[in-house]
Length: 250
Image (cartoon, rainbow, N blue to C red; front, top):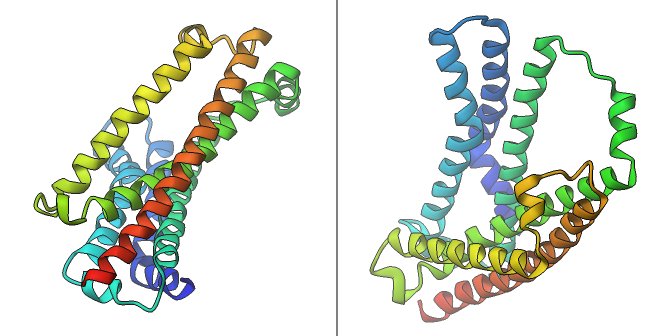
């Protein structure tokens, strides 16, 4: 599995570097330009490349590697389904973290460029209050489980979506499966939200000023995070089975 991940890095290293470079470029362009113009447009495009276009490009390259012209080669690697899917999952998780890092670079430089002074001691004291801790823990939990869920969903829709029943649709197979998974996810979110009565928390958003709403937000993120982790494990195992199944009939 480590060799597979190293291959991914070796092939896509320039795209990864471009993600960070474009984030720096976009922040510098928007930082130094006071009025509109082509430089602002270039800065926005560079930011979109580092956070949207490049990750999508890498995802498509991964799909073509595994299920395109070289699919038979990668399917015949002396690796189990869990190792192959695990390598792909680690790679896509790293790409998402790099996109998040590029976003932090972009907004961090923009923030520094504005010259706004922030009282970090006051901000830290507010975050460390009981209400602030619940909000912060809930947000971090939802973000981390969301990363794992997104990664598991990607390997799931590409592997299961390329099986024989959906193979006739080509790239449309994974797209159909992805749309179905998103619909199911939205339904689960709505059911959990209705059951826990969290509409007020999302509509009003007064997390930092209401301990009851902040506690409700934390409890709901724990439930949703647990469900997403369970779903991630199920999708990962099903993807590994899909890989082994294709290898056994090839």
